[in-house]
Amino acid sequence: MSGRWVQDCKRILDQIKKLEDIEGQDRLDMVRRVRFILHALQRSVSGWTGWINNPDVMANFSLEELKEISENLAKLTQSFVEYDCEITSIAEKDLTIREPETLGESTKKPKDRTDIFYVK
Image (cartoon, rainbow, N blue to C red; front, top):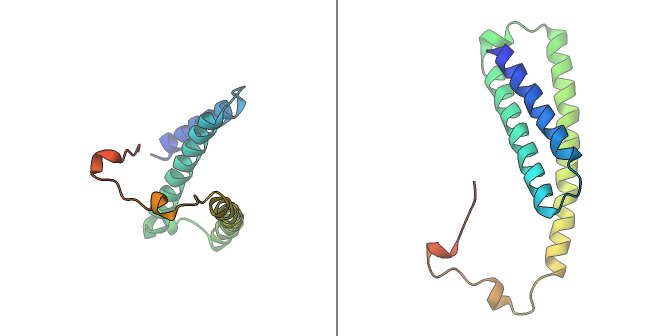
């Protein structure tokens, strides 16, 4: 199982690199790339969650290994959450600036569900 997981991780890293190296990217390409990266991150976090919730797996790690894991994940998470706050603050400011003059238009609800289209 872990051999396949590692192979898949390497394929994901290769794909991220390929997406990074595409020349002439537009906004849609950037959205596609960010979406792929976030799905990769979500996959990894789900894997870690599976491990941490499995006492049989965690029993194989020494205290030193667990400390290292904890410190590395804390650094990654802190950096990611700080970036999340930064981008969210910028986006909130941009949305406030771009808010339409007529509030009624921006708060209208769709007449029926066919007016809404989401891509998963």
